[in-house]
Length: 361
Image (cartoon, rainbow, N blue to C red):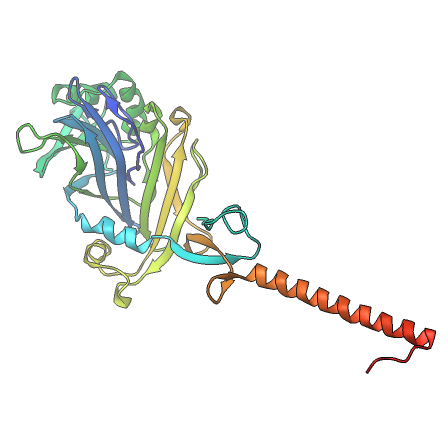
């Protein structure tokens, strides 16, 4: 599987490389920052589809990257509404929970409230083969095969993809496994326009009998990496290991049924109207050099649903905002005072009776 990582970066200065999908390289003397790379993966056991979208900033007019894929790929523009649909479906549930005793900002301590809130190449095949090349919106997309990592790097360099030496070394395992490559160059059709904001999403499709998420190229990153991934499959999915990063965190898991109205048009189109299980995964890579390979995802032991819950803590009150603790303490004090008065009165009566003094009516 090709899937992309959602990267949290500062500015990348040419040459720069930080994406798990490959290398994001701006043109000379330019800067580009990838604020977010969002990825959606649809896998049915035989075919994999990736929809990816970058949110970028900086002053670059052009940039490029390369992505390894395990089989022959097709590339087209994706539907930007897909990301809004998934964000709505996976948003955390907000709940309010009460607490009894006052905290720092509650009266009498304060005036406020505290909220918690592929096919193998044939003999004699060229070292680099161009399967196809298309212009898709602001993207110049080349689909490539390669039998030699240095030849691949040379083709990329000769065609405007200035990639560092180290990347060719990291590409070698993919070449050895006979993977193919999608080289993408951001080239806005409007002259002089800089690359900013949310770019058009790309949709990549290829055959794959397993979910593999290429992460090896992120070893070259100079800043901490962040992976964000939506996986649509028959079951709840999970990475087999952390591959050198922090433990992956599932932020949402649940079954979606288009017939029940649980999905909108963009998501229904990607899933072909079939019920799927959605798993949202987040992972941090504080030290990218420790990344030891690619993610392989597998079905979890059970399709257990999960949704994050964000709690807003609120002091328990009644009526016009009277704290429950104050009523409880006040009632308890009053009860103690009353009990003390009764005990004192009984003691006085017993004393009078002992001294022969008539009891008062």
